[in-house]
Image 1 (cartoon, rainbow, N blue to C red):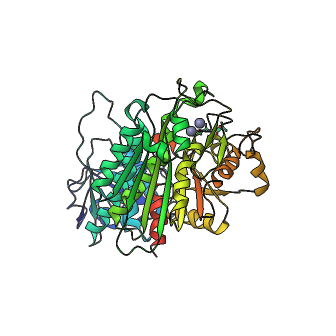
Image 2: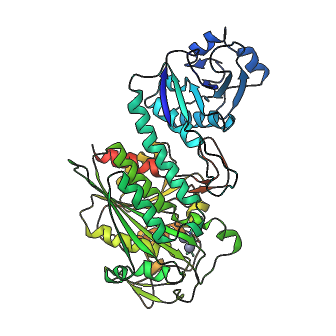
Image 3: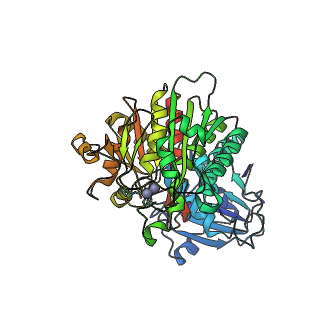
Length: 484
Ligand code: BES
Ligand code: ZN
Ligand code: ZN
């Protein structure tokens, strides 16, 4: 994304301009320059188009004058505009314009909200996403250029920050949208490690014997049924002067067939997205490095493929973890918690001030909260609140779900310390969170279940159907808040 400041509407070289409008008052926000250039506000035309200014509404008008952008896109700002609905308005604006429009002017950044310009740039960039790797007729697109009419003087800094975030949201989406064939665990690890190295992060990959030596029981058990072996990727971002250490853990199941407890057609269809947690933590830590966030961050990506091959684990198998805990595998489709447990053991051994895991963990959390909201689970209500606050500030939706201690008995096993499944579908997200708790010792820890928002069926504002990159912004916000 290129961003430049232009003095006036008529100085803009863009093909189109996106302006905003509030409902009822019909007053446009930050559009005075455009209004003037058009020889008066376009109220009559808007009325004719039935445009009310509600959020999500858009209308496209031709510019009758010869100067400036020839297309005017008016986006509704709704009655309670905040930075997130502004980000969405920018997304709606980008999406009504054809993809071939590569230069867009706007006045939306002039709305009087903290962070307005960054949100507008993000909304435009997120909505500009395409996944065309496998389209035989795709053409290379020019970078998107945004002209901020009467933009701020620190436009360069803003542009860099918005690009750090949007590049990494794109990266997370690319990884999730990649078909499973194109992302064997080791190749995925190398692809992520290369991008991370480009941002100055160090990394380490454990595979084969190293997994055995380090007692990565979950990865070995889950990955055993696939011809494409599992691995653990550790990324580290260690900025000078950091006072706090955030440890991130991501579920990276490149395809979840269910294993021997194989899934039905309907539920298997989107399971290339089961590595979204890993994509989110990787994209998040790389973005933090690009932004220069002053928090030390370690990320563990537990990467495996859950397949029902000859080497697959069987229901009723028992595995022994690095921390000594034994687990009875009640259901091979509850594989996420098995691989996360390996990473959580590692996380709990270090000096983490906070451990956060991100995972497409349970259908139950998706049933509870639907496709737009993530579930936050923590033993400590204040910690849950902290992560919820980060999500709110980032404009990502989340909700706290409980971890009642009397439900711990669900995970009891007759033959091992714990079991990875239990006899009821109800409260499945909670049972999974209580299972993970067994591996974090007494460390401050929060679990984010992104089974709903990681991958969606519908396009809306800056979110396109498929991988969403959900969680990247929440993690950045959280790491930034830890830097003080
Ligand atoms: N990857 C799934 C959870 C999931 C479901 C993610 C829908 C995204 C959308 C997970 O591995 C799984 O299969 N969980 C089971 C657990 C059960 C077998 C105990 C579930 O939630 O049904
Ligand atoms: Zn599963
Ligand atoms: Zn899964």
